[in-house]
Image (cartoon, each protein chain N blue to C red):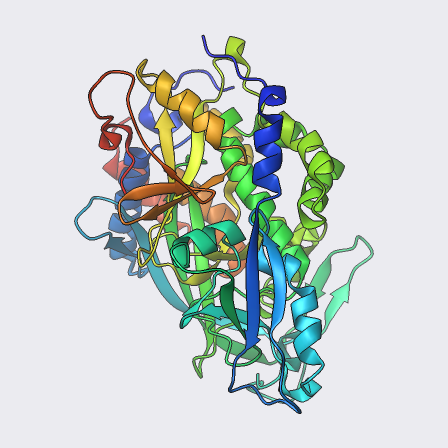
Length: 265
Length: 224
């Protein structure tokens, strides 16, 4: 029987949490400015979301603009609007993982592409989206028992931990969601998402736990998927998770056929 | 939580096959009633969703809908009042109203084992409604139910199949209100169309009415 303790993985949890992407923000040249805007550099946390960590970016560029020329801020990379509701690490791995650092993002304050991007006028929108993902993941793991048993203040602490980059505060709550009670059969399903460029399908992939050969895959996946729902990026037929390419090998000498488990890349 | 079901429609959690079956039945009845639902299939698969568009008239005094920049009212006179009663509910008296174009999609969520309602709304000029404006189109009495955490009920999401921004009704409470319906069904000796019953609860909140005539056909098309 596989037993996993969070304590063993604490170093890995920390490494994942504190992963950063050096980013250079440049103002879209078509914006109306009173004087030239300098680029703004920032280390972005992989596990967070753009609207939560870019207040300073906004303040920096607003200094050279008039209020009447400023609408909702949005970001773009090489012509593609960046979906703020994807974690930052996923956005980078999807769009720019093979390019030289820093990651160059263009900032816009007008012509919000509302057919491509969700609006985000406050952090409470990001919070709602994040909690919605957490609840959906728990529906798969624990039939929503754990997330529904948590109090509202626990949900708030989970979010505040993420928003304020407080590892201990976050994991004090997240460990409940990551409990894998082997007596009860553990997780019902393992939730993870596969993101693809140019594919609209964003369905959560469900891995059934009743095949014995899955146990090896299971321990492998659990050892790398430390935040649920974890972000696994599909890029030219290889799996990338938190910036690391995953090699899939089965316990037997046969190649693990992902299609048997409903995983399509 | 729920004991084993005697018939497929009595499981408290829906599976995709049951969802498709329920949708087909709903579709049959919709065709008979001329209610406008259609099935949109995902290319090359059995997967798909129900879709319907409708014009909806929204009273002009339910919220800041008319204060938005560039959002003009269809009439300028006779604003209605949403008056608060002693028990905290609202009564709305007649007045001018706005016409909006709605699009409703019913998809299946395999995470929750439940149907999910996605929708979006446009002015007749083609401008899509923002979240705050959408809230204004919800009757004040319904808004009272959500006032503690409105974003946990309805928020904007990427449509899972189309990738575009839609509003959606969060499915996490569906099992809660569908449970009693499914439990009571065997005693009443009638089969339950999960999707139809669920829609009759969530639909009216966002302006989607489900005519009672939908129920009369169930007896004739399903065996006892």
